[in-house]
Length: 259
Image 1 (cartoon, one colour):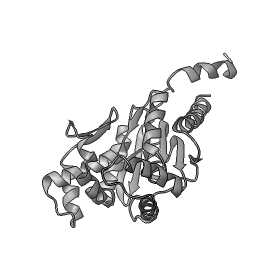
Image 2: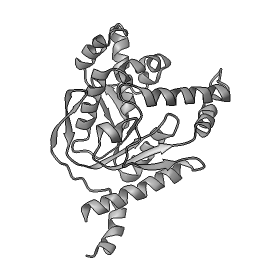
Image 3: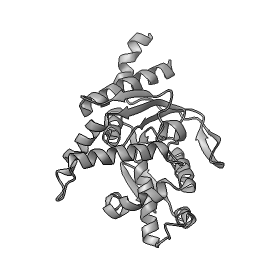
Image 4: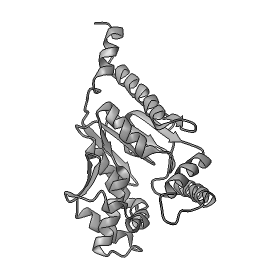
C-alpha cells in the first residue's frame, strides 16, 4: 500500500505507540530517568492565560490520548505541605514530606496516595502555597522524574512551562501556545465576572504582566520557548481552531515517524 493510500487510514485511528527504554539524565545535578525518544508525547508550553489546559485536554480527546495535568501535581505537593504543617520557609521540610507520598496524574485527575484530590487542589488556599512547591529545586526534580515515568507505555498530551524544554525534550511534537497580554487579560477578566468581587480589567492585565515576568525569570523551572517548538498565537482564534491546527501537526509528525 502506498504512503498516499496509507495516510487517510492513519488519520482515522489513534496514533500508534512506540516506546523506547529509559536512559539517565540530570536536572540541577540530580539523576533522572529520560526516554530516548518520545514518539507518543505532545508538549504544550506557554504563558499563563494562553489556554494551555483547555487546549491540551481537547487535543488529548481528539487523539484518544491521555492528558497529564502537571500543574495539578505541584498543587498536590502544596496540599501535602498544608496537611503536614510544614515550615514554608524551610524547603527541605516540604521535600521530605513529598518523598514519603505518591502523586500521580491519570484520567484527567490528580491523585495523592490514590486519593482523588482534583477538587481540593483548586482551592484558593492551595493556590496560594503552590509556588513553594513549583519553585523548590528538589521537588521540581522529583516531579520531572514522575512525569517521565507517567509517560512510559502511555500516549500523553502534557502542558506547562518547561515540558518541551526540560521534561520531554525529545517529544514527538512541541507547541508554544501564546497570546498577547491584552487578549489573555480579556479572557481572565471574563472569568472574573463570575466571582462576587471581580478584579477590574486593568488589575487583571497588571497581574498577567507581573506573572509573565515572574515566569520568565524563575531560577527553577522558568518559562522557556523550545527552539524546535511550533509557535501558535491564539489571538483571534477559537479553541477549536487552535486544537485543529495542533492536531494536523501531530498527525503529520506521527506519519513521518512511521514512514
